[in-house]
Length: 123
Image (cartoon, rainbow, N blue to C red; front, side):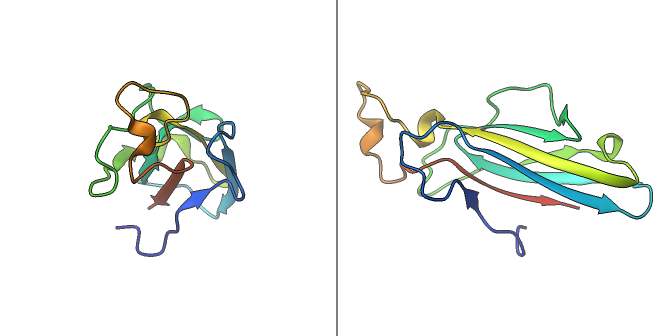
């Protein structure tokens, strides 16, 4: 999984930066019979295809010990794709991956703390 994908994050972002928004346009030469989106967002994420949310769930990224375990989600996105121009977008928030304010459990000193990032693949 994710063999050809690369992690994306806001370049030059500081840990206190606002939530980054990413968008990628692409074209399909014919109608899609089946499509799956695999995505791992470190921090919270909202994901869209052609302006439509990929899921009704919000803040879906599970909290883990990010330096040893990350979890990805799979979505059937067949109904959201069309022949011709398409666009994928994602919005990333901090969540427990990047604690920027004072917290009573000292999560902001965790070894994984960093700016939010994501990796995804659309098949």
